[in-house]
Length: 366
Length: 125
Picture 1 (cartoon, rainbow over the protein chains, first blue to last red):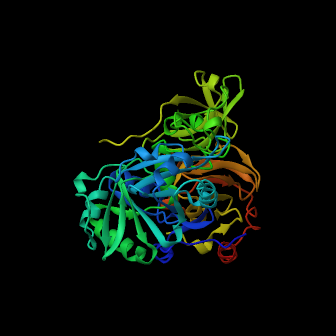
Picture 2 (cartoon, one colour):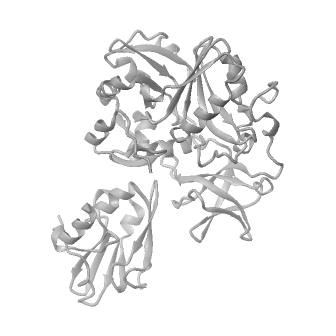
Picture 3 (cartoon, each protein chain N blue to C red):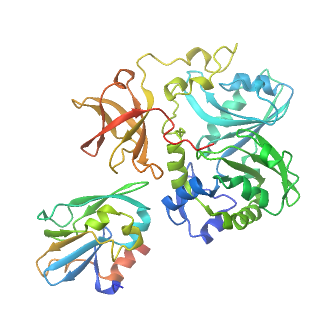
């Protein structure tokens, strides 16, 4: 076992009374007070999350855009400077190594943010793909902390936070899946209008040494707007309601993008990219569906999806009693022929009727 | 407030308040905190005979599923319908409004359980 890792905000979490859990080799706050209170705060006001465990890579050089078109599933060369795009790192066999968000910082300069647990796999894949491209890929994860402020009050809170200055784009003009630069206490930070909660919000990339001061400033400025610290438990129910996949659950090395409903992320007519020849799943490959049920008992990861006669046709990958909707929701991989039938969740021996529904389960009001 | 020193405890984090041949059962604050926000509770029907150590119910939080073990032998004489309707009582008041079931027991049925000091030693270990 390697030693558990902690983010630069560890002392803050401990002082706030957080419970910790292992996530991708990191000890991360799972909750501070109440999962549900933290969840509702993000939907109704705002929550602040430490997501410094996530990995950051810089991709720079005259060949950076072409390189990313080759190394990732999307067409990043078409991404405008100032914008962000969700993408996938595929393996040669078309399986998913990780899902990432790519930010175009300049014509020849990109930032790639990947999941904590896949940091080594992504680094290995990105480095293995540089040959023949004029590009330098660097794992800069240890230099930065990442703080997410998510919820309808996020913009107001950031705009009122003392110390955040020199914002490159007026707040009201900052779009979802775009970024702006700013300074905190004189040092450059990146304000990315992205997130993993289904709400409006920001992810702030800050030098590790400035993380604590920025966290404190955000919390203080947000208090009167209802901002509270939120842990991974709330983050999980929020992203599930928003229909967002979680690596290790909906996405794996064995999953092909189209199975996960991510066919749109793959630009298959690119001349050349890793995974191109194998990206199409078999016709009978299971597909990701959303399932809703009544009552309060949730189908959870690993539970079987069965038909009326008890035939197992799928498996739940994530499930919870939706805090916002009040009924159980789940994502599951189901045999493509079974999605039109009456389905049931096998909840520890009890069969609970479940209805296939379009994702997301929850969509914020614009 | 319940005097926690008068309760008996199981290693599965149930508390038992013994009153003669009656025992009220719930889960401890420690268990409630470990579970997170409780959102669903299933309890045995009144009249069910339960055996110490057997699974008699389920306690689900947003993040996980816990089993309720009978801490002692007995017969279920009452279940807390309020906590089934509002499972958050388990988090808000685990030793009070968050009680789960009442059992009819033999008067010595709870003798083998832990006292407060022994239970705290487990949770702090």
